[in-house]
Image (tube, rainbow, N blue to C red; front, side):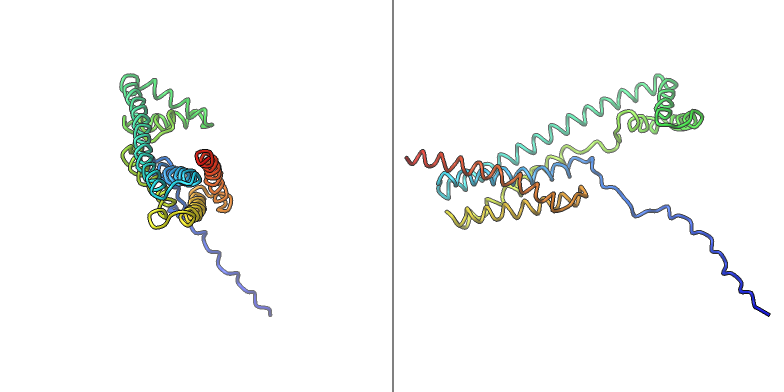
Length: 250
C-alpha cells in the first residue's frame, strides 16, 4: 500500500510591509540647491580667474589678492542673490496662499467644486472625487494645504528658508573658491600654477561624482561634465591672460 504524502501546508502570504525603506530626498529646499551651485560656481570662477591672472605673468601676491578678493566678493554676491531670490519666491507663494485661504473662507462650496474638477481631471470618478473633496474641506487648514498642492504644486509647510539658502551659498562658494587659491599661500610661480590646476581638476571630478549621488546619473558622465565646465573657461582665461601679458610686456 502506497503512502500518500500530505502536501505541505500553504503558508499565508505575508502582508506587505507598509513601512518601506524607499524614500525621496527633499529636492525642493533652497539650502541644498544653493550649496551645489555655490561650490561649483566658486570653483569654476576662481580657477578661471587665477589661471587668467597667472597667465599674464602676474606676481604671486597679485594672484593671491585677486583670488581672495573674488572669494569674498563672490561669496557675498551669491549669498545676497540667493536670499533675494528665495525671499521673493516665498513672498509670492505666501501671497498666493493668502488668496486661496480667503477664497476658501468666502466661497467654500465653489472651492470644493473646483477641487472636485481637479480630481476628475486626474481620472478619478465623480463619486469618489466628490467624497474626497468633501472630506478635504471638513478642515479649512487641510483644505488650504490640498488646494496648494493640487493647484499651485507647493507644500505650504515647505516654502524654503532664504537665510539657510544664503548661508549655504556663501559657505559653499567660499569652499569652492579657496581650493585653487590655497597653493598661492605657500608657493608661487609655475609650482603654484600647476598645483591650482591639479586641485581644480580633482575638485571638479569630486563635485561631479557628488552631484551624481543626488541625481542618480552615472558618476563618470557627471564628473566629465563638471570637469569640462571647469576646464574650458580656465583654458580660455589663461590664454587671454597670456596674450594680454605678452602685449603688456612688449
